[in-house]
Length: 353
Image (cartoon, rainbow, N blue to C red):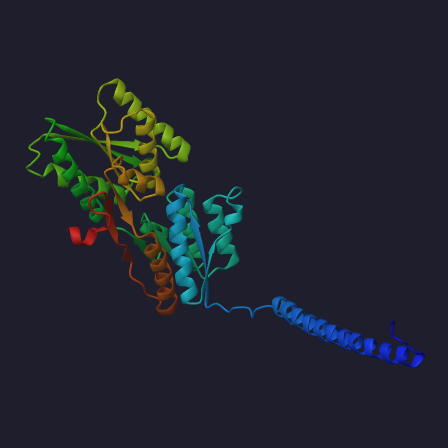
């Protein structure tokens, strides 16, 4: 039997249905309001600007070198030290590298009135720009290769003598291995023309002297030095490959190549691969890209000399800050050097002496 619905029952049932609907609408509105409030607060916080940081100094970092991997790591070391000491470090006018030379970027930094300049470069124009910085009263810290005539207040880098000893010991150990199967060992030192000067001359002479004084060789070692013109990575690679190609034609491929820069190290390794000289020519290099590290692991490169790039950057900031605070600073900040090889992956250069 169907239910008997009267108008009063219908009104009552309608009211009962409306009440939950109203409650649902209120709850939905409340939830929407809460969600809107949360979203508003989130957006407001995101849009709020962080208070502008006040720095105690503003230093320009300018590198002229083509060896960008190493010098970028130096910059990262300077940047980290600057953050800790409230100094703003800028890879100055880096977005303008294609349009401005390193010397011009130095001049822009001078015109901008920076508090200090951290610089790496060797060209005459670059050094002249640094002299202009001195004349403007802006202190300069030089990296890598020193030149007191620029008026720099300090130099941060590895000692040419210490590096020479590290190279010499690596070359001596490898040479003695080669002399176990040959009567004589030949060694070629690859240097960059634009690095010519006191520091590089000291480095090369130290390598030669440490080897020639070793009585174990007893005149069984020949050392040559080849200077490679600077011109970028590809030009360097082509020049080194040509040197190896000519040596191969003459039957005089060196047993050992000592490369005095990261660029030359990579170029020598690529040249050996291209000419299929792996095993015939051993490399003792400088710095280590991922490629060179892998080559050492696979015994295609004997060893490489490492300079603590981040320490170099950090010390350069410390040197500038010390000069600004006291008016005095040490003329030379030494940077740690070490050897990376298959046998001694973390051998420290200081412990070697």
